[in-house]
Length: 122
Image 1: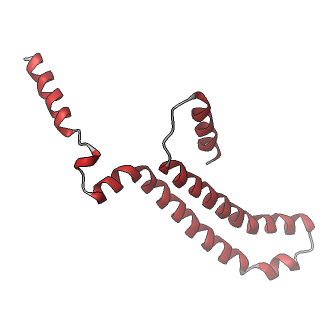
Image 2 (image 1 turned 90 degrees about the horizontal axis):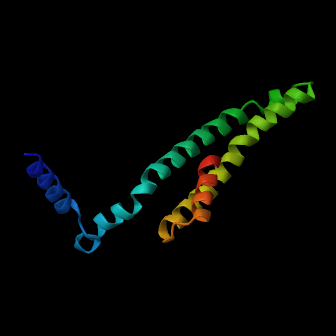
Image 3 (image 1 turned 90 degrees about the vertical axis):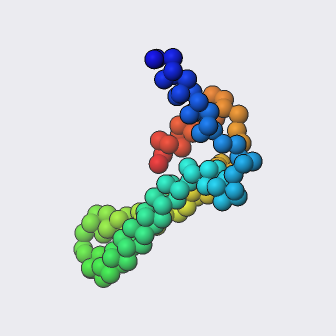
């Protein structure tokens, strides 16, 4: 009984394997770029959030300049600049992710260490 179950599982795994040459072009595109779908939607959502944050923060600039305390003014300006810097950083990181997705790498220790650094900075 156990042998027949194992044989059935092995056959189903064998039939699930599809070569890229057997796929239609759009299936191949989806298979190759599957990793990017989640990351691109995340970056787009963060971009929209940053735009809303910058628009809402820019409406209070007159109150920021009217404040007499320099520390409060500096903190408020930092809160206004952070979404801009984060947007630029995430756009650059998105370009790197797309470029690395198109490349073929040999898995070495240096590559794994570099990927770990990129994941830590996200």
